Length: 201
Image 1 (tube, rainbow, N blue to C red):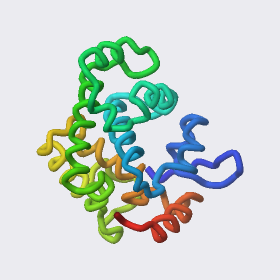
Image 2 (image 1 turned 45 degrees about the horizontal axis):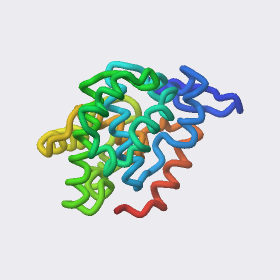
Image 3 (image 1 turned 90 degrees about the horizontal axis):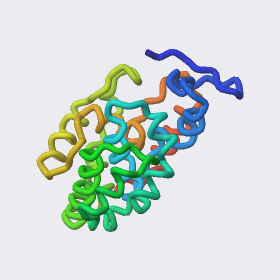
Image 4 (image 1 turned 120 degrees about the horizontal axis):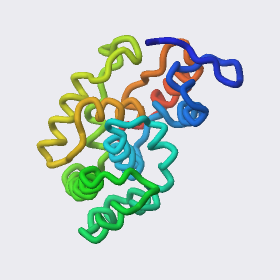
C-alpha cells in the first residue's frame, strides 16, 4: 500500500492523505514528528481510542471540540471528572458520544497521573518502547508491531482502556516513535531530520 498521492504543490506524499483535504496539513505538520509533551501524548492516545471503528477524519474534524470538552487533555484535570461530567459529555454533540470511550478517557487520565508519579512523565514511559528503525519493515505495510503489542499489554496491566495493539501502533506512528512515511514521501526526510535531532526523555 505504498501508493503516492501528489499534493496541491505537486510533491509526492503518503497515499492516505489524499483521502480528504484535511489530511494534508495534518500529514505535513504533525504525523510522524516526534512528540515529548505529555499533554499531547495523552490527547493522541485518547483520540486514537475514540477513533476505533471510525475514520481519523471524523476525529480530526472534532478535535477542537474534544479539546474543549476534556480541558485541553490536561490529565490532571480530566482525572477529577465525575459521573456528572460523563453525563454532560454523553450529551455533547461536538464529540463522539460513546459512554465507554468517555469513561475510558477519565480512567486513563487517572492512570496517567499514576504513571507520571512512577516514571516522571508519560514521555519517558512511551518512548521506552521506541523500536529500532532497522527492525521495521516497509512503511505502512503493517498495523501492529512487537513493540505496540507489548506496550498495549503493559498499559492494560496498568489499568488503561481502549489501548489495543492497533490503536497503540497508530499512536506510535503519529507521535514519531517510528517514521512510517513512505520512502517517496516529501515529509519522510523532514521527520527523519526531526527524529535525529530529538532528545529522547
